Image 1 (cartoon, rainbow, N blue to C red):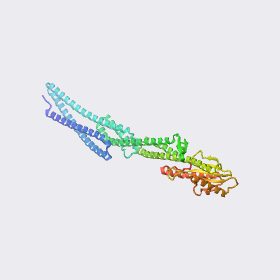
Image 2: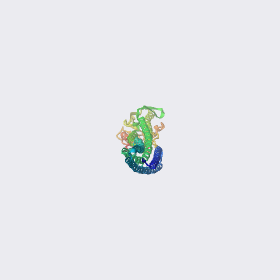
Image 3: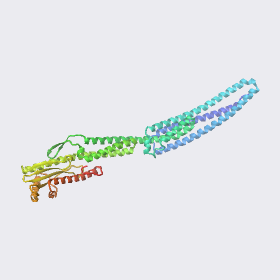
Image 4: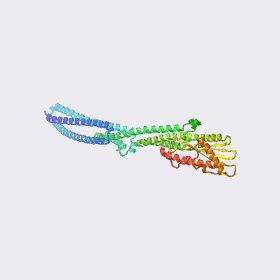
Length: 479
């Protein structure tokens, strides 16, 4: 009876075991590489660009070494299978010759065939397990790759790529396409190709995710600061515009009730600031939609400046309100002083204000029995410091309407007497030269006073804007 050469069989078995050992070692290297990949993925979010580049090189080197080893293993397995196929054909030929030469050894032949079938089944099972291990490795890489991409998508990568195109490379589209290649290779059974694509793209995805998390954190911090600054500017604007009853106390403790809001007294400045807040609201919406951290930071600085300008606007409001009532009180004091000096000789024909804008000068007309008319104008004299408290400037002119023309001598004498009376009462005299200007009548006198005040206020308003950093083109005196 003939038997299969046991030495040949043992040699084949030993080679198969060596091949299986090398396969297990390669699998162990793959698992260690995957573990290192996961660890590096977790650590890479906080790495610098240099660290990420170094990590990329390490991944590339490890990947090339792994691919080389897998290729050697594939070649070795192919050679083994080829040798085993030749050896199997030899054994089958020997068995066939045994059967033909000696029918009595049929039972031994059957045992040899059974042993050969068992051996081949074990080999095929081993190869199937090896293929299954590669499939599992490919699926593991796919899951890791997909998880990183899902985290990226939560951070709106496309918007950040528009802002930082040179940093976020390759883009999210390329990385998502890479995941599709991995899945296609797995479906086609090309597990080594799937692993190769994943091991190239996972480090790039990890690096992109780290950058995205940094940019998203900066955006959220900038958004919070801008939103807080915008809320503060809105609140300050609403407080200025709110209805409120105000008591103005002027010199001597005299009180005036006033219910005009800030937009009335500081209308030009208030309106410009209101428009700027609305513009900032629109800018905030656009920058927030674009996740533009730098733009939001700049907007926060602008809103903080507006908040300071609104505070300055409140100071202007208080000063303008105070000056108006001090002008009115000055007229009252002038009339009282004149009536006290010449009881019953001065009759009050009227006190006049511009009801559309109380910041304009106020004036009154007094008349004496002999026909002389006294026009008194009280105007705000704002501080050289734009946000400083101002004073009141009063000046007057005497007219003689009892005759066809003014008697300049009599008018000058009466003007001097009025000036002396008011100075004794502690009321500030007119600036030098004002008393020498003789307009045709009291109406012309008051109109010119209003025009002079409008020009002075326009200059003061321009200076105030420069001081608080607010500018507007085409400014007019009364807004």
